[in-house]
Length: 166
Image (tube, rainbow, N blue to C red; front, side, top):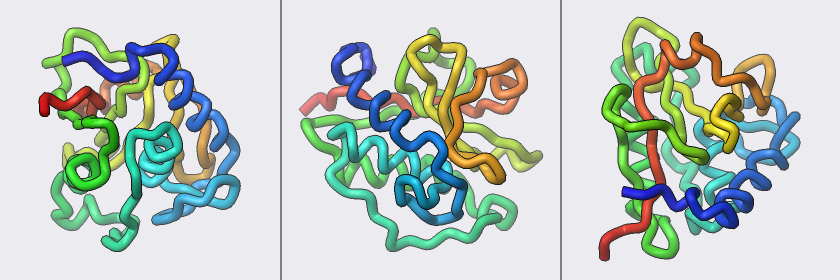
């Protein structure tokens, strides 16, 4: 199952969207370029800008600490729901657990658990050089950072956008 971002033209569209958000402050449950974005809504907004999603639904509010209170795999669930409802051009997504993928690819959404719960509650996007990622994180906002061994230890898996089979 090949990522749609192996097409360098499509990846460049996506990367342009990602980079255009750099410097946007972190703000929970927000996705306004230059004003504020959390990790999940930043990624969703970039997928929309790159023509992967037609819409991002912000009707389902989630508290900042949802993952501490039995929120389950909210990021994964919401992303799959968005792909089911709003994906364009026959795109779909797959979740690949850590250890099951051959390698991570440019444009993969990386899920992280930064707590003992093991629940995926943070995400970022792997860049083309595969040694950097871009994400929105509390106190720093949207930043490009090295994809270091520390991040790798906290990775739960990846979401890959693929062409659907229909």
